[in-house]
Length: 192
Image (cartoon, rainbow, N blue to C red; front, side):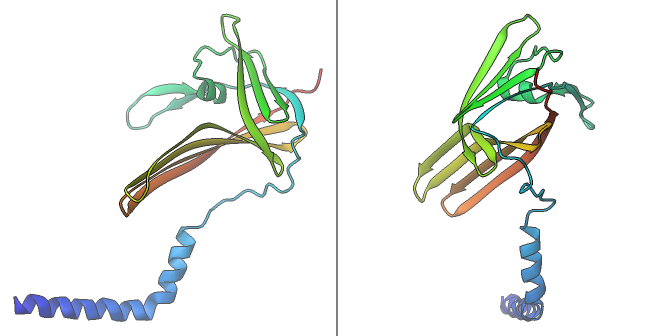
C-alpha cells in the first residue's frame, strides 16, 4: 500500500512540474480549440427591408450515406415544412412584413401551402425560430433545444437561409451539448 502512495505522489509531482512548464502552450491550445473557424464576414450584406418580397427555386438534393448504403433526399423547404411532395418546378414566394415571414409554395397536387413565422429584424438580417424549448429545475436539471434561422441578402440577386441548431443539457454540475450550422443559398428571381 505504501508503494502505491509513493508512486502516486511521484506521478502527481511529475504532472505538476510539466503543467508549470507548459501552461502557456496549454492555455493557447484551449483558447484556439474553442474559437469559431471559417467565419464569414456578413458586414457587407444588404439590410433586409421591413417589407420584402421575392421568389426563388428550391432544389431537391440526393444524399448517399457512405456506410449504410442508403440514399435519401433533402431540400430546404422539405426540411422546414415537413411536406414530401413539393413541386420544385414552381418558385417559392417569400414575403417579410414587419415581424412576420410568409413562405408559400405548391405541392405536386397543386395544393398551396403558406408557412407563417414570427421573427424580428436584427442588424442586417431577419431572425425567426422554429423550435425553442427550455426545461428547467434549478440546480438539478436544465435543458435547452433551439432551432434558429437567419435570413441574409448577400446581394440584390441572392438570399441565404442560415440554420443554427443548439442542444444543451445539465444534470447537477455535469453538462453537455452540441450545436451546428448550415447555410442554404438561393438565387432570387428578377421582379416580374
